[in-house]
Length: 204
Image (cartoon, rainbow, N blue to C red; front, side, top):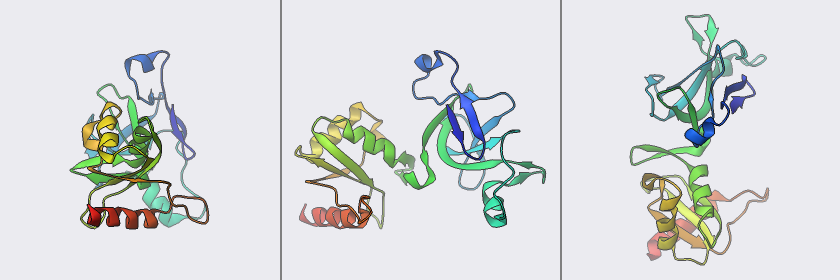
């Protein structure tokens, strides 16, 4: 199923439909409308990745005393009906089934496609011999970089990821390390990883 705090459950998968539509998150509940928009707010057709917008009786009217955020997240259609700009990205098929790709801060664009860093990292971790992995989004003229904790050669890691996700989602570069650097809060230190990736690029 698919849902958010701001609208509770939005879509649910009918029994056994997941066997016919692997990866789908369900179809909108009765009275609920879900569609996809681009960065300019234009509505996109089936198969195009964009931000999910949700309309229906269970969408809340807004946050308490947050008018600026409400204007961004809950714009009013015809001045009356609130529609939720979810911050979740994905696509809808011809029959209205939702396919979740990732959150706004998880998505980056490369080679004209929207890619979920979480999906890429999950695919890398499924490669035998890869203990952990993270993705550095494109920045300052360089493409996305996969940083993997593994003893396997970078080229082998990227090659085997083809069995997990579509080729256009696989970063063009991979850097292997003994361990991912962490911040004081225990999160991946992406600044330190960016330095490692840049050093690897200069050496290569």
